[in-house]
Image (cartoon, rainbow, N blue to C red; front, side, top):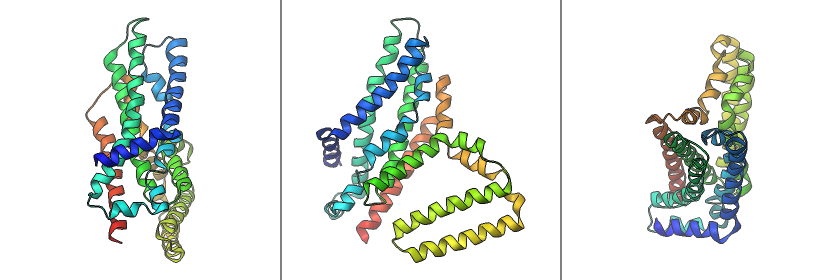
Length: 287
């Protein structure tokens, strides 16, 4: 695992990717810190961090798109799959290299509350709670990007899908508020989602017939439910979209509230997607 971790870390810092990630990450955070904390005079960094969470949609695909997809494309993954290293160690080494990148940026951000204290009183527990939550949500998004990268051989596809997934989880609450709660709106929304899932199944299974059959069966079942039991669909879309919001728990850290469920929530998401990555690589090893 250590060898894989070092290899991935060297790859990031021997190329421009790692440095660009850190530069853009700190530039965006620094801009919002300047606007909120220095211009507006707020002593709490949580306001700036909660406003810059969309940065993950831009930067997470940058560092995760190639981490497994490129090896799948070049077939160098076969060297790992046939090596005596366990799959868990492969996944852990790659994931920890990603976490190290964001940890470096977070260590720089940790200096900001100390700078603020030179100009007035700063609530350090609240500030570092917000920074800790920001780090955890970054870890969760990196695990999602790692999993998506393991599904394909195309870096571009991995980057686009990661961007879409992260963006949707960032905007889920806002999107849920805009979607009507009527049964017809629910049917249209679920149909669009089912089309996207069918395209994803086609990409993964490499079998258009299976994807079309699964899509047709699902769409027929959804249409029948809408026609026969329409009221059951009412209000389900806003509820489901709201459940996909990863920022809902994080937003509580802007009030300085550190509850056990916050780290458990984000670490659980990170573990689930690392486990899914493990299962996907394991399937490739035995196929």
